[in-house]
Image (cartoon, rainbow, N blue to C red; front, side):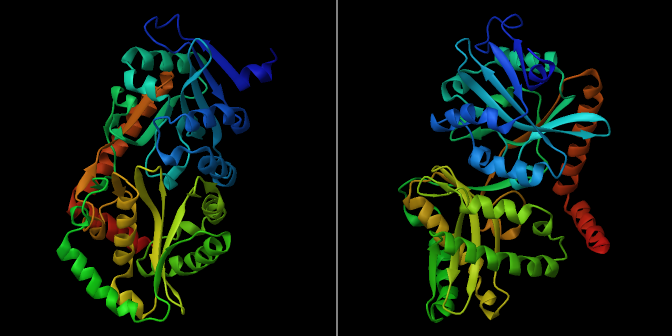
Length: 395
């Protein structure tokens, strides 16, 4: 094997380190194309994973954003003795102060981060399996530390196997609406809140051509995104927030994901309220058929904004999710007040900072302490208010 090939595909015999593990080999791949077949194989067989880890979402993220940020693919695949993939970690590696940090692909565009696990393996995964995985990574030593943040403790009622690793609560929480498939609408949104929203909606219903719809054609998707990228900067400026959508590559990434088909829908679905004169509100999110997660949204700058179009649109989306048998709905991380109007529970998420090399131990400890500090600020209203004021002053 050539040196280049050895660097491209390093395989480690993990059985010698853990006879109790089903993991036989651990491979690290730095080329998305070489990982695609196993990645899609896990997706197609109903793996335990979130929709944020789909190949068709993360491949364009890496191409349009990851490369710009100096991230190189660091895809970890664990195989059994028959070379069948048991686990795929869609990671990237980047250098921070000379330390090789491996983290999940997607950056701030993925609400939840998780591996793609063979479902049967995930249900029975043990500490010995994780020891075998980490042994393979340490024998390779291509990164110094794993920084795996915003991981759900459970997904579709199955415990995330990485919860067996050392962990701490994530910086940001995620309000959650638990749904009973086929349940009465009032079990998801109370009748009193529905009446309030319907009262507000009557003002919008007077507008010619008023309607709710899910974008279905490429032309619809493009038109709604054109509107979004024109209005969202105005909303963020109004809130004295930096326009993250103006960062190089972000718009191209979002357009790519929204135009890519996934089953009967898209990788990212766009829901909208419109009338003949204007787009009133847009909410876009991602689903795996069990759960819908919001990704980005905005609403009109016109007088129609006075009638809470964003809340009305959320009601439509939740009711649609209930009809399609979803069991959960979320509006993304953060504690904005409008989220609590719908999402009364909290998603348990955790971070893990796992050293791979000796110098990675210092980095892992520092990252852990930094995130604990950030969480403390977010949990303390006084400290968070002060942080917000300082951010506003610098803006």
